[in-house]
Length: 406
Image 1: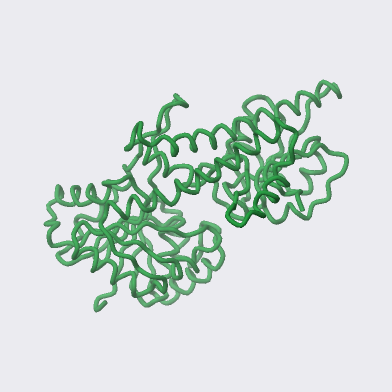
Image 2 (image 1 turned 30 degrees about the vertical axis):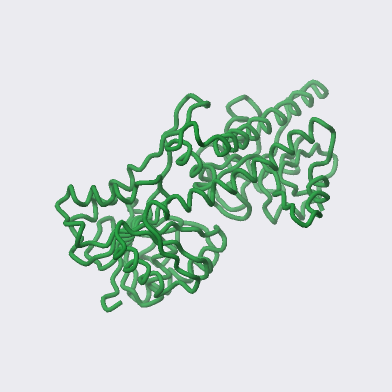
């Protein structure tokens, strides 16, 4: 690209790594976030999230002058929207949550004064089908001639803990609202992606990301349902899965305490919300995985009640892990965090352990060794690497993520 200026809206788990990577590829990057503390931290060459290698990339990008953060957008050749797309929570657990694209709409409006003819506007946020068209609609309402702007969707598909590598190596799907927008946006990604850049239309690109995560959710639901059934039948689920996976065409995933994160725990609902009664399997998988979390809570509370009946005092329960997956600090939609919060609300004495964060608003974060020493019941909710080396004796252990299985 002749003019290599990029404005990225949202400096979280996707926006900041993307900004840092592009800045180290000699793009002039203007990062935008609504949180002043985040902006200040980045401008100091530091990071506000945990991700391997990200600190090095950000420090280099800021020191070179190629990355600057602000609370307001600026003119650029390429605009990337990387903001959250949660869903609206409701009190009815049987109802399908409605997607919330308010942040996307706000981001589109914020860049409108800076968008010019020939610019590229890319939505990277995982979104319900039709959201890219909504971005074009918002820009048009703001007076932008969207026939002269290249608007496209390119969903992120990176794994936390490996983001800096996967941003470059993973294949990317790019879909524009016009064939020309697809080509122009795809050519932009080819300047820094070594994986294949696959071209399609915007709606297919949106649906592709939702499909990928729904596929994973369905497979996890199968494993989680197996774990519940095996508990009922008195079977070791871990051994069962190990044996079943010896079949050359079987690859059952590992069960856990539920499913968390902004992607797998959220994206299937986008399909269910739009697809209604025709999204039967996808909805059932979401319900199974949500139920698994409730099942875990009941198992823990039953063990705490049995301990109190046997010892005449309340049990101290160590909740080992709060993140939504191993070895990261991300708590978004985390079943482990939800379990700890529910236990606390229900009067259980908990010791919250999360090696990847320093504090939490709901409870103190306890050192791993201290929690194990003080606890009567040790509950493994997340398979952090540091947990596998623990030596636990004379404690009741509830292992929902195979930390103690060797």
